Length: 79
Image 1 (tube, helix red, strand yellow):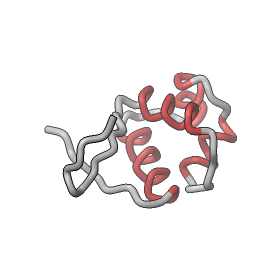
Image 2 (cartoon, rainbow, N blue to C red; image 1 turned 90 degrees about the vertical axis):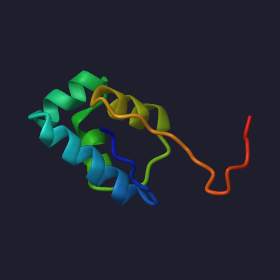
Image 3 (cartoon, helix red, strand yellow; image 1 turned 180 degrees about the horizontal axis):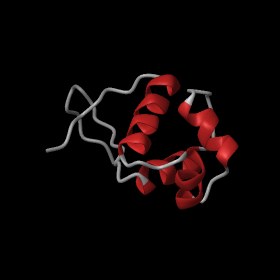
């Protein structure tokens, strides 16, 4: 069963990523290597530091088996 979370800021996203990493028993270094990002980047991401490095953020989520989606609460179609 999957869980949907409403992420509204970088700190919430970082907390979800940190929890996912810990639940998988991964050290920060191992998760960073698996995602192809630096330890410093992942550490800052988990602590909620705002970043414009979206590609790397998405790689981290993907490497932890997470999927990020965007939903319009009004149900309007988007391209």
